[in-house]
Image 1 (cartoon, rainbow, N blue to C red):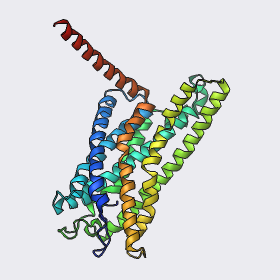
Image 2 (image 1 turned 135 degrees about the vertical axis):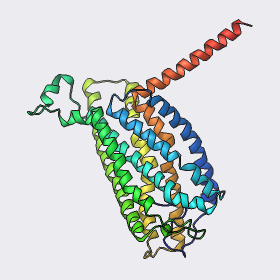
Image 3 (image 1 turned 90 degrees about the vertical axis):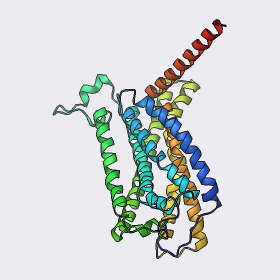
Image 4 (image 1 turned 180 degrees about the horizontal axis):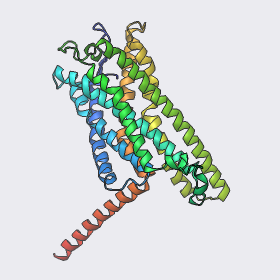
Length: 345
């Protein structure tokens, strides 16, 4: 995984830090850390008080966990980039928090893909209860479509997702084991063993591959959903623009967040990774520019911890109703307390 600072392959590669990476990004990360922690703490408080009665709720709960894990890495980044920590902090970032950041990001990306599949099955391939008997195989088992919507199957997929990413990233921790000192502490590749460098490249390609596959899944699912929604409106001849607007807002919120947060970084990551190779013929100016672009687009990826709660509110009715009920109850109690205080004057 790319290091939060300047991941370098050789000691003679320049430090590409700039005013942007040292003075602008740290305050921005601090802001999204505070805002994201508040929003995701509320989301976790709501979600883990409601039952997992659908696959969508299962996936969204796992997204909350992934976002909280990602948020836990932000303070390390901010402190390191502000130069407030010793070189030992850079070693901790290389070995642990950078790995946790990227693994949490790709777990979130995979759950977005699973959510899009769940929405596709529910909206496009949905079968009504009256026809459920025709969806059973001659062996008596439920259909694949019904299986994809079941809570148990969603939990299995969630467990497989976490296990897959754990198996992929754990060697990045174990193989970043070469002796560290003040000179090489900021160069993550120099802390990796020979096998660790190879594993880093393989896991990077694998993670990027997962992203592009997920992107294609999202594009297919939401293109199909858009066609089905349009056909539905034409068939029933609904002209209620408010209903249509709410439907589009809830269905495509995850697509907007995905494209804003993750697509720019993965477009930039291809040339940036090539510039890191020892045999690359990129100039120092080009490498510097690519590093700045990578850091800027990586910030957009981190911004998803603040945007994901919007997805929860728009897509999940039980989350939205629980949150509004909690807020209305708190406002009602506060109004009652104020009225009682005024009556005692």
